[in-house]
Image 1 (cartoon, rainbow, N blue to C red):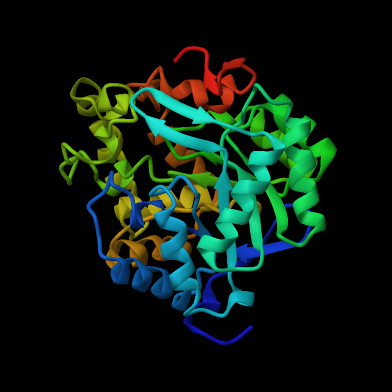
Image 2: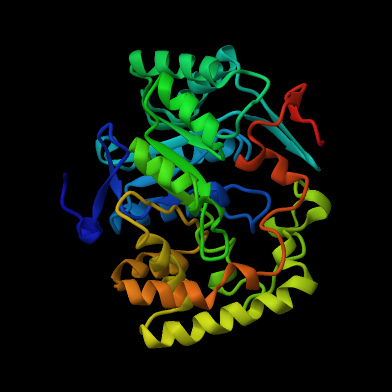
Length: 357
């Protein structure tokens, strides 16, 4: 590997099939999302290249981000980077997102169409890690995985991942072809996967890629030290009535207490609350690679700084105790959106939509 400033960032193995990535990844969604403050393409590209210069080599996108435009942007950035040094992850399966409506599709024909389309948009010959973004429960996961296995055999995909998958789906999918990574929401205030999902992944040798490791920005001060934009992601139209419950006024006032506790602990560790919260996720194990995203270089550098925060087992317990699950006000996502989460991954769908929609 060529020498660059980021050689200081540790590299870890994700899964048992040989994928090696930077210990901290980068979630690219916000670089083209209409739910965040829009930024010019050249700024988004500069953020990706800056992340690489700092040592981040693991970049995460999806065909639904934009939609489509995020992969195009990432593809432009990749042309400025040595392809063999980048681990590129993208996803398929979410056809479209509307108000209270996420259309999901996992047929073999759709798998192949999406993969070939993503390859063209990204301008690459292969995808390092290809995720099933959401599970289409109207199609047996064995059929979806069967086509993904063919794509691996053809060299178009190197490794297969799942996102928001249930225990049963993970087991069944892994029996068809080894799953390298599972992408799930995991942060100090979203810890439902710890009881069963994480142990299963470790039993099967599956790496864990936490998205929203900072609680959708809460531990970076969103809603506390930073105002939540009225037209921002947390109030976007594809979330029921435009809200994440934890950021609703009635819950946010209670949750601010958690942030205050993290501020005090951050002072103790000589870091920012965002760095402490991200360090907590990073310390969950060598098989855990969070992918925080941002549209600002300063925030990216702050996130990278979390790698310098060293925590003992006692520190980890103290941080966990500062944000006890029972003290968190509000659900992580609304009652409609949760129907597309792992808890409902075995719920029958009608016309590609969760039956609750």
